[in-house]
Image (cartoon, rainbow, N blue to C red; front, side, top):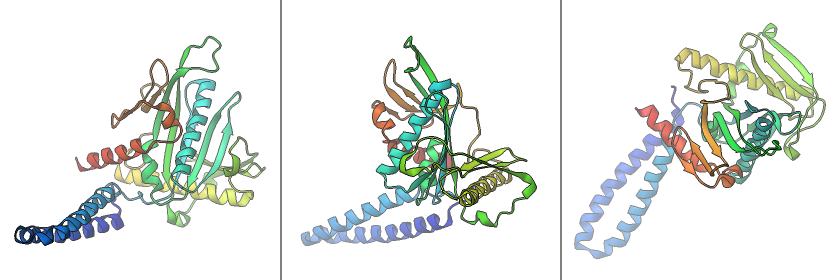
Amino acid sequence: MVKNASNIEKIVNLLEVIDIEIKDLEELIELSKNDISELDELKNQLSETEQKILDLEEESLYSEEFDNHSAVLTVNAGAGGVDAHDWAEILLRMYTRFLDDNDMKYEIEEISSGEEAGIKSCSIRIDNFRAYANLESERGVHRLVRISPFDSNKRRHTSFAGVDVIPLIEDSDNYELNDDDIRIDVYRSSGAGGQHVNTTDSAVRVTHIPTGIVVACQAERSQLQNKIRALSLLKSKLIIQEKEEKLKKLDSIRGEQVEAGWGRQIRSYVMQPYQQVKDSRTNIEVGNIQSVLDGDINIFINEYLKWRRQGLND
């Protein structure tokens, strides 16, 4: 995979500084053996060096090509009927809570309501430094096990939702699209979203006919602006797809595209008969499922970045 040149340069600079400071520490240690007054300076220098090592540890998690980019996160209800639609809406709430708690600027670009409850799908645009790297962990199938609120017999149901995360490519405007390869449909916006979603008649859906990729946007009041944003996202997706094909690694950026169903989940959320959220890649487990659904997913993000780094280094 192509590396993030700016991050690698920062890592190299930090390593050089740390190397110099370690040599200074060695000299201070020798001096402090004969002069106790040097101890305070030694402690201060040690604290500063420790902080730089922590900074190096953090920077090493963000070395991939698109890590610093903004992103679009999409949620699609999978297997499970009305429960899956409800589950998709719960995930939408989880992500918006996370974004709000971390002061990340976002906008709901598209949302499609379910027939009975919940949502069929939604797209969230996150304009924030390292949005892609910090949300890449969410890409995959999320599985929910609970007593269904829609089942009069109060039976336990399993629901699935698929989450995708795409980096926004700044130079996507230079990517040329063949007009014959795209179909543009206009439709009425639907679904709830509060201040983060527009509800006018200007929603736009763009289909790339050769690949079957579909993107939609309803964030703007202007149909033209929604079209521009949808085309920009489509171009980003096509750029990513071409890079995947060139590198011959289906999981290098987007990962394998799979059906949201049994055996495909990257994370399981169990409400009954016990409470637990477990990530199948990192094996991280959290017992307080409500805190996770309220947006506290930082532990999963951080552990995923460590897991990803380890996999890239193997």
